[in-house]
Length: 347
Image 1 (cartoon, helix red, strand yellow):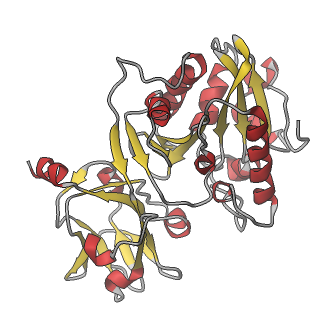
Image 2 (tube, one colour):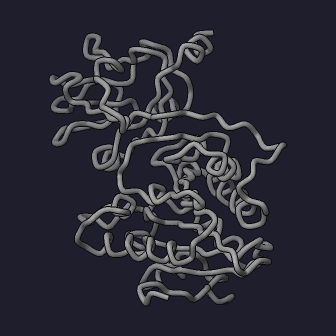
């Protein structure tokens, strides 16, 4: 095992003292393993790639006193311990001034985050697991969903162990899920908002199925149908622009979103729905990408007396009211309605 990782499970006394106290005692990321009924097969769970997204770790922590019966040997990577411990715990996505760990996979770069990403990838390749799940939280409140780079039966079956929604994206950012290969699907599960108790339960219930189900990558006849969304569009502010949150335009801000914007997560919104207030640059302050050829901003939005409005029925998700994340990552993702969806949205 790479000495970069700790391999020691918490003792019973440490578990009794609580997750945060144990985490504060860790001086490096952890790679922990539970044996399975079939020790020759492997699965991998990655948690805490972002230090402020703890539902996966909380779910694992809750299972430690009474581990489930694992179908195969299962390995857990608790990754960004360094960021997670700052300021009382689970506050920072990454250590300030440092790279986002989940933007460093499969990419050349210099620094500890790139080195850690390479070490995680090396360990996963060595294990040759049958599946990898990366557990996250969304930056704002909202329901759970899976994100994949492939829409295969194996990815669908894996997503269905955790959630009712699956996004198939061709945007490439250097995320762990981009390591997906034939024979080893890798998916991201966004469990919901980090502050939502329901998100911890999504992670826990999904983990139980991921650990115990065998076979894992066959769709169950009784499984719920997945709501599939393809090629979501990433919406960002241009570099150097300013964002605010409030109930009207703010001087020197290029975009102001209402404080209730998170309520729009995953619901179909009608054409013309106002999303916020634009500054003097108008739509020129926005950038969009879908990974297959940038759509025009004007095909998605229009400006109406300073308001940013949707041009067609759309579904938004991963909306955040955290300005730091909105600027460093994105404002939200969106899909526009296909004709049949547009008809349903207007009913």
